[in-house]
Image (cartoon, rainbow, N blue to C red; front, side, top):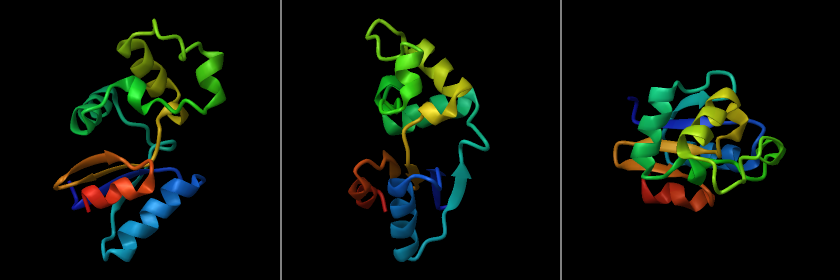
Length: 116
């Protein structure tokens, strides 16, 4: 792993802000545009473990597809949510940043400071 990785969506203002914060701190991260290059199941599971979060925690609830697919139903399992996120990467909340000191879902963007 490079020093810093960011799962990034260039159309997302929070993701752009976090990327700018990383660069302002003097780092050039490995940028993973996860909509173009989605993580594999193994990579996504590893991310969840690093974040210490469940699939529900990283589900982008504001995405209309969540309601369309019924993913807001509390009865949906982690396996179902993870599968949906792998099939539709837009459902993955962003930005996710990984550093040598940890991983964070950087919402709010200030969460980056915990691991930078």
